[in-house]
Length: 232
Image 1 (cartoon, rainbow, N blue to C red):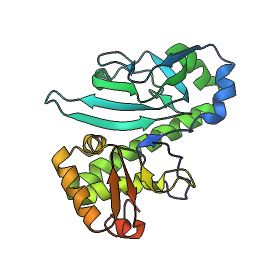
Image 2: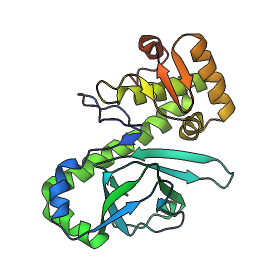
Image 3: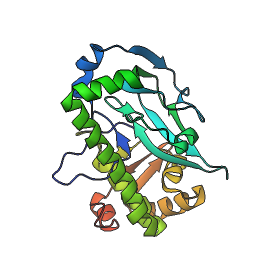
């Protein structure tokens, strides 16, 4: 699942974050760091691990999620090349101990300690501004979900998600989304049964087709018609 940032006058909510810091790659290389590679399936951040360092993604992709005590998993976001995770801050938030980041493919990062990144943040104005912009985009994703998505019926929630994922794909890649039904359920906080039922309804309407681990939007205008204005 590979996406690009949507460039528009009005930014859309994002579930995948990449390339927000790509322009600083050479600068990061010039600063003290450790280069690490995580294999597919390995944790970049384990449950209960304090956020005591920051990673810049050179390549690969990870999923950021939390496992609730009820046994349900909530996918928060996906992260690819050019992203920084976790975001830079100097406070300790208890909620971070329940968050997990796992590699969906081999992931190579440049790793900085908090003091190392703090020095860059305080001396590089452009980097500091990019950190603030990144947080704004991340907060926008949560506001969209809390204020808007929570009030939508299950089909509208799913259509909004599919539209956002389709809209942020790279040019020329078509309308195929490589994501499992389980992932969709974990993003939206819905059951697998609900996702299967709604996908079946959309398939009957000719809006999409499905295959193992991916789906293809076959009628984008019909999908748009089922989305809410906050998504489009």
